[in-house]
Image (cartoon, rainbow, N blue to C red; front, top):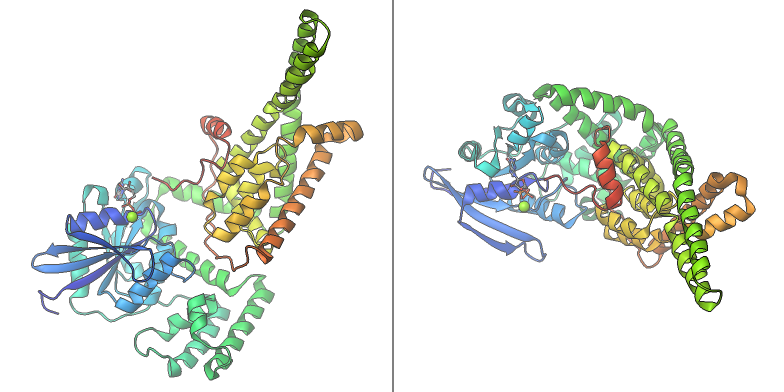
Length: 530
Ligand code: GDP
Ligand code: MG
């Protein structure tokens, strides 16, 4: 390639890693916006220059992964595989390296010539995270350029590394990582079969196709007819592996593959990242998780925690609830003394004061419930709850992250469906999201509590918390069944798998707890980091 030949570069990266900032810093005003053909995903293109070299830059949609589960991922992957840009620049957030590298690994597995733009190095340094670009580049086999896109720092170097990589017209060289003996053997068998009969010979590596096939990538599965000669060889292999993995690990090939990718990333980071403070906390988090998300102990702890919250909420709120009660009965008798007997007195005392008092009396209880949920959330435990509940909720057509909405709506009695519905925002899958929205109002919300409280008080006065707990479990059952029915009927369709993140555990701050209690938990959390 001569110096005047145009180089095409695609920008990939997780949402919020700084892709747009890099794009703007590289191209300045020389950009224009269109759509990817046939879909409503925005396509931004622009030109950059270094020395006399023109570089055509395409901003891909932000994605966390490169499977074909979302439109964005599919568009990004199709562009890379179909247009075959000379180089892909992966913009990674270095303050959040492990999560961001998941996409980088997938790009490397695809084999595309890759430059890693190690962005947000200022944020990382501030947090005491030091990434060694040299080492990272060595381990990944791709040039790594540290940048601060918001200040335009490192852009020249980024362009230079990109052009250097593109100049000798590089070949696609897929990264092969081990997925453990079982999966690796299946990959070898599959890629041997594919080697002989792949349709786009020379373009896409059979190894990559084999990995995707075992991962259950819908687009790749669809390219092979199960009844064809090839399909009759490939599909039984896939089934056999799935059976084996299920029998040995109680999991599916997809999760095993993802686990090994994260294991690979963990190994890379252990060598290339120096983060004194963070590393220590990561270790601690890992150690805590080994117990709290353990297959056996985890659910037990979860039930204990929920039960503990019941005791906390009901016992602690007893006193303020009683205060409210005596205040309103005092108010009632005072008003009775002032207003003469009759319809008007009855309206004010039994209607207004008793009515408002009956509802307001539960305010302390609701506040304590929200406080407890805020604590779960701020400490990082809620993410573990979502993680553990994911498998169960999926069988009902919901999603691990539905659990937050369910808990806030009254999964712990005394919640409210309004913040609950707001909390469904974190659900990416539209159908699981709608199913969650439509069912959470059946939870034990605060408005149902006064009624339950009267009934429980009348029939089971000695065991309030226990009976409330039982009523709540019944509500969960009803919500789950209703969701399952919805997903079988009006909201039929596959749900998209996605990465469950486990943020580090942290001790909640008093201030944070009060803010989240006041805002209603779930309505403000999980906003993308700035
Ligand atoms: P995109 O979603 O991937 O396109 O990311 P954006 O380019 O929109 O960036 C997300 C946010 O991060 C914006 O507020 C940027 O100003 C900011 N940002 C981007 N790069 C950097 C950086 O290197 N350092 C810092 N501190 N902020 C950055
Ligand atoms: Mg953007």
